[in-house]
Amino acid sequence: MSDPNGWSAPGGDTPPPRWGERVGPPAAASVPAGPGQGTSPVGSTPPAAGWVPPPKPGLVPLRPLTFGEILGASFQVFRRNPRTTFGTALLSQVVLLVVTVVITGGSAFLAFGRVEQALPRDRDAVLAGAVAIVAASALVPIALQVIVTALLQGLFVLETARQTLGERLRLGGLWALAKGRLGTLVAWSALLTAAYVVALALVAGVVVIGVAVGSGPSLAVGIGVAVLLGLGLLVLGAWVTVKTCLVPSAIMLERMTLGAAVRRSWSLTRASFWRTFGVIALVFLMIQVASQVVATPFSVLFSVLTGTLAPTGDVTDPTFLALTAGTYAVTLGITAVIGAIGSVLQAASAGLVYVDRRIRTEGLDLELVRYVERGGRSVEGQPDPFRTPETPVGPTTYQGAPRW
Image 1 (cartoon, rainbow, N blue to C red):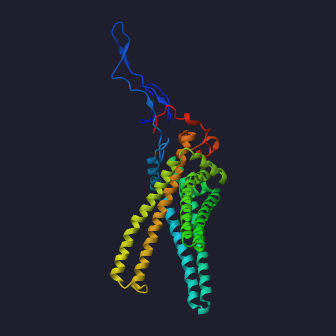
Image 2: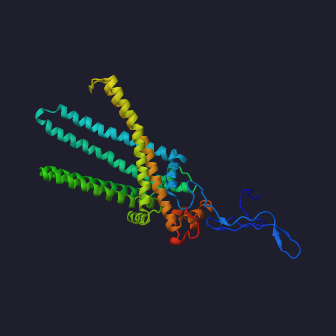
Image 3: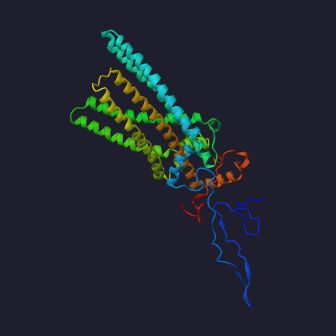
């Protein structure tokens, strides 16, 4: 029995057209005309030829994406599969917060407890050691943050790519796809973090040197140089971030080495810098604004309750301590939720930009359509269409096709 909703040409078994193929008008029925005349069609003028709309098996239609579609689909990623995306990200954020509080807080409590017990003549030396211990203990949560951020980014890039094909995977399925690539992704995240730390240390070093050796006009010059250097590094950092934002996608989806992934991202963003910058900057801005909007009412409430219930401001007052602890707990909860949502949005938006750039430059949508039409089977046994790109077809790929 044929599909009543399927497409077929009138009077035949012509297969349905593919995306981008021109569809001719259906043959019109005709009746004999008067003497000396041919035939005339019955009814109105036949419809004009048109284009087959692009398929949309999942998250987005398989065609070049607009700016708004990329942003909208980024939110749809965790709405379509909240347990795998938001649930995983939230659990990771909670674990990171607990580890940070336990390690850093516990180290600070023990280290500064020794300062209180030290003899007056030894207190300065013990205090210096306590500060060093607390600073060293803070490196552990930072390292864990780098690793967890890299892992989440890789998993969510994979989830975004599979959702474009109409698939939704559980965490176990994403781990299976990510096998062998997570180490490279963690190395890239660590490299970026190290670059940012070096840049901040450079600016801080200029300020310290200017304050230490300068006085009067020379001090002002040192601070001015530090400000200019900071602004220059900020611009450079934004540029490098945009140019390399597709590195995780290349690592996870095309399973490239680190160097090849950096070159790949640099190439894909070559003709779309400002568009990519707009997506990344807008997502980042939305996350920051949402965090402030949610956290500000609790800060105001804390100030009001503190002024009402603990007006003396005594930090040893049990009421003041309870309010501080409650506010800190709420702040940590908000940070965990916003951080979880933000990690999904940032990875999803970068993944969609990657898909869009490959569609525009390589015709990736044609390979994705064939993959979907084959029921999720790629050519020559390759399970992933993102790993088998066709030869780049150049700017004539969409010549004559409708524009978006």
